[in-house]
Image (cartoon, rainbow, N blue to C red; front, side, top):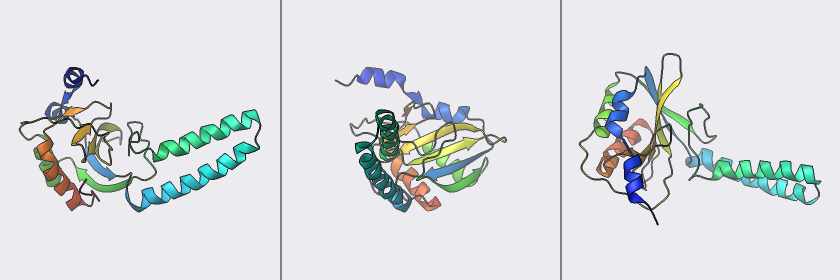
Length: 189
C-alpha cells in the first residue's frame, strides 16, 4: 500500500528550492532517448550476449567478474533507475547538452517563471518516473550547485538529492514547450 501521507510530508517546495540556488550558469541536458540511447542499447545487448557466452566456460572467479559486467551494462539501459546527470558529474552515456544559460538569461528566467507558477493542484501518478530532461546549475568553479531532473510523462521533478519537489502538474505543458524550443526532443508522453 502506498503511504501518501509520507510522500507528501517528504516533498520539498520547488519555489523554495529555486530561490535557494546560488549559481553562475546553467545547462539543460537530455538523455535516455533518441539515436544515442538506441545505439547504446544495441551495443550493450550485444556485449551482454557475448559475456553470457563467456560465462558458460569461465571459472568461478571469472564468472563473478563477468556477471558484474553484465549487471553494469543492464543498469545503463534501465531508464527508470538511470539519471542523465548525477551530482558527482557522472553523465549517462546517452546524454547530450542542449543549451547553456547565463545566470540572467531571459529564457532561464522564463523557465523559472513557469517553475515558480502559483501552486494549484498536486497529482500523483502511479507510473515510474523516467527523468530524461534536466537543468543543472553550476558555480563559477564549474561545480554542480543543483539539478532539476524532469519526467514529463508523470509530471514529476526531483532534485540532485532525489527529493521529489512539490510542483503543480499543470506547468508541464508550458515547460515542455519551452524546452522543445531550446532543442530538447521531448515526445508527447
